[in-house]
Length: 354
Image (cartoon, rainbow, N blue to C red):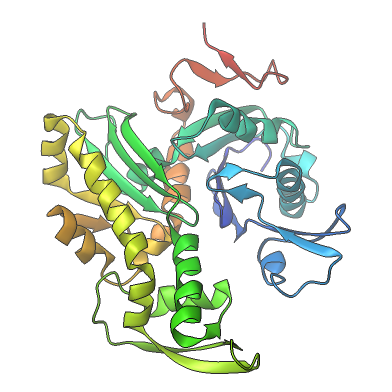
């Protein structure tokens, strides 16, 4: 295991590791439960089960917010603890080359924080490389991203929706929206409270979203959900119809479709022609919402390709990348042209190439 390359998808909702030759070795909720602010109580799925059920001494933290690291210390704790569990001790993974998938539209400081996270850990990495998430999505779709043909990807994740146009191994145009799965869940909670006088948790909202939600009205599905009656304050079970869930998220869906159309309006005609031929490649957990492809087709008149296993598209594409023995020399491996991670200068993290 020593020295094998590892790909990391540090998502808002989940954190995933792919080890060269071994596939996905870690796939857990990206959260950590801290007791008295300095003792790790649980990480991953175990910590996520504590949400809404903890005493005052325990705090459940999601360290990544809208695709970037929002709580560095919690992320370091989670990262080191996860590798302790995988390797016995995190330092046993020393000498490993890491590749981190990044959102496209983030600042230089936010970009550095991803590399710094690895540098400051107990891993002592051999190298750290950065790659855009849309590149990983395109690779998961089996596309040749080095060709002079435009490819459009839409990744509807937990906190953000990432829209990107790719050609010749680079990002031609991109847009990062704060509207995605978590916003859908919030809208469902609010709408059911207003229309049904029922308070439900975000976990129940997510079940409704993935179970009966539709991007187009008229699915005629129902699901029972547990919550608290607003009037009496007592626990209550209610049957929710799919059209009620659609009404809750339709404005969020419209925001995504409008931004997709706006992005298409600003691409060169040659790239537009390529996208007409290939269509749009859609991924992310919320891509599984019923009839999402039909909604996008109706709004854009383009072919919509929902990727197989959309929740894992980024990590699967990252796996394809690191399984290539020559990945370090690929032109799209770094986030910004002219910059790369320099392990001889850990204090700076990222240094200018000569």
